[in-house]
Image 1 (tube, rainbow, N blue to C red):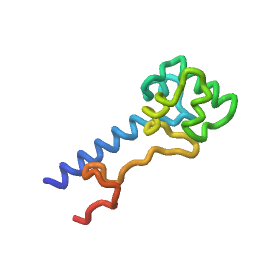
Image 2 (tube, one colour):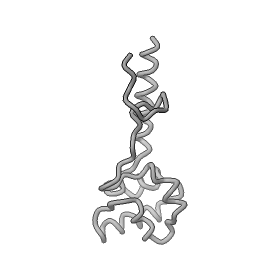
Image 3 (cartoon, rainbow, N blue to C red):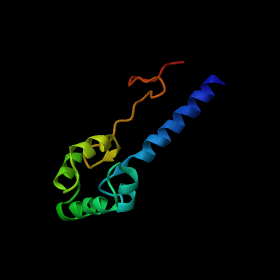
Length: 105
């Protein structure tokens, strides 16, 4: 029973973590605005314009070139941003709080 509860919690946490991330190279303006704090539809449209003009976004730091997006906005959203070169790191064992291999029970 204990293992079933653990597995359920783990799967729910994984779903929640992936639901919060947004790929800046494929998401719509609405998806970007919904997923990122401090980024409304207007700034999200600027992100789309940026990637259309300059190509795929390699790192979140590229967003600093967009007027209205600063260091604070970038830092509070960095873990949610996926780019061509950056994917948010998912802990292997989030329930235990360790980034080590799962326990062998």
